[in-house]
Image (cartoon, rainbow, N blue to C red; front, side):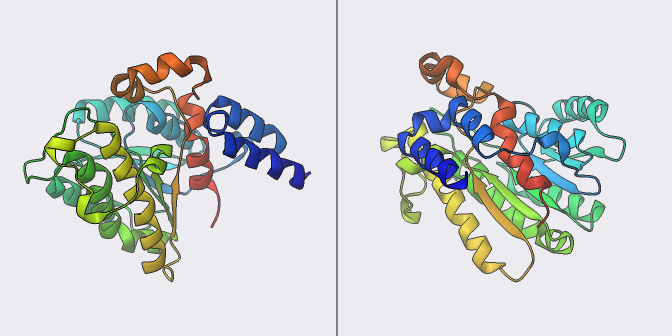
Length: 277
């Protein structure tokens, strides 16, 4: 059975489009006989996650809350954080909890402050999920002069992970980074990671950042190999989210019902967060 399943998996992967849509996850779920997420438990696990107000991050947070996790939401808008905290608390298992720390990932001082707050509240951290991200069709520059896609999706995760490594080590945790299949379209040249104004493309800048995320996880794994912390970069497939609809409106029009749901996009993320090391 494994041989047949692996052959089907490789065939889907080679065709790209079926693999990344709801077709791919539906077929794999059957041929590999996946364990339903509802059978897993995250009781006693504390997980910090960015990008939780909508889409994949929201779906992942809902699933982990229902599995009993102690969630620490990281976001910049306090009103939204309070609303999401309240809604997730209603779905949370009795053993879990939901709190939040405020930080705009485009402002490194706020990232530092959020990491300090999380570290002081939770000696052991069992998961850190980098899910926040956006595709900017027009080039945006942060106050310090750094291109915003790079700062939010590469620099901020690096800082947050570095500051929380003692807590992750204490909890023998996992660092999970939501990358994208778009990274296949970009190589990694550090000197040109930030695209200049005259050649800027939102999709290409996004792809470069996602490629950098994958490489960053490889570097973390090498650097912290003896810490007991695991590092994973993953691809959610092609998912119907507000972010995709806003940044790539034509994408949804072409693929339409073939796009995965946010819950399907979050499936692997939740499984990795819940699985024992």
